[in-house]
Amino acid sequence: MNWVLVFVMYALLIFGVFMIESAARHLPVSPEKLTAYGSAGGYYSWMQKNWIVVGSVVYFAASLIDYRWIRWLGAPLYAVSLGLMVMAMQADDDVHRLMIAGLSFQPAQLGVTSGIVMIAWLMQDMPKLHPLLGNPIVRIGIIGVVSAVPFLLVMKMGDMGSALVWIPVVIVALLVAGIPFRFLSFIGFVSAGVLPILYFVILPLVSERGPDRIDLWLRMSQGEEVDIRGDGYAPHNVSMAVGKAGWSGVGWKASADRGSLHDKKFIPHLTAHNDFIVAVIAEELGFRGMLLLLGAFALLLIQGLFIGFYSRDLAGRLIVCMVVALFFAHIYENIGMCVLLMPITGIPLPLVSYSGTFVVICMLLMGLIQSVWVHRLRGHQEAARVSDWLPD
Image 1 (tube, helix red, strand yellow):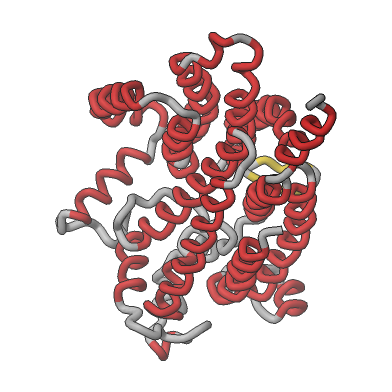
Image 2 (cartoon, rainbow, N blue to C red; image 1 turned 135 degrees about the vertical axis):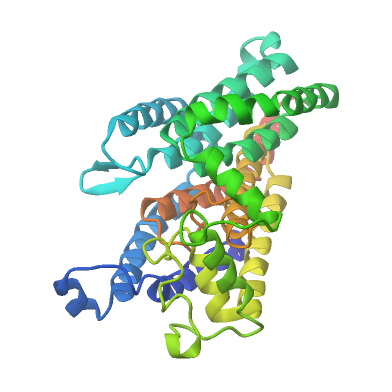
């Protein structure tokens, strides 16, 4: 086991439980739950602990099973995730969640996970079937098709945040898969050329709120006046909470008497425990708290890249690097939208936000990274056994 990865992951999870108790304190809950747990924050922090227990089982199972066996689940998981996303599009839910066996989850999260495993499997094994399948153009096509289908489905659902995380994942997949620089340059130039068409033509067709949110973000970034009681309410108050925090913040679970915007419900209280938890962390713990949080995430991602360097094959490197890219995209988007570096997209902070099944999926992905580390010497051991049987 890579114990640095384990300790940092659980440190972030424990930190998230404490911050959820403060961030979720204004959520409506039943009187029975209020009596049993003392507050809404206590209830949601208790729920997060349960999800962490489930995620721990998934994490250690994925860590101890060789990822070369897990990669064969890529195709069936990918097909199931696409089917669930189609079902979610038809469901009567604002955020396109599905309710299965009493569990509520967004299939877009499963789509990214299965897509990562699928790409790693295809890049590793397809060239073995025929040399033509190892051609750079074919590899680009495979990565493009596997990622484009869930990307377009998620965009059609209107979940721009979950769709955008595919972009860094695909870029990293192309780099790690060994696509020559000339092909990457061509893709970059073509992407820059079609960007205006995507923004002005395609985006309004697949997302109703996406263009408005981007336009609002651009106007606020340029210092133009916006309606802070309307569409600009969330980005204005969230960035105000971060900006006024100072070095030490107002304190954990601070009251309105101490100047807490969260206690005054200026931070959107219905989503403060997931989408806007960074605003609560920054306001209550200040700049020093955010430094610790960013340092922990940086250590987690760097440790992931370190593990990828020691992977025994291409599939392991792809899994590790794409998971790191996915986590980085979530972290950058979630923190960026709280400080006006990104438009509001509604995306959780990995391992910290209250996100139900998403924390289990994050721990599954971390388990895959751990599996790459645990089984990094298996290939050398197999090669050594084969060489022992060969004649001198």
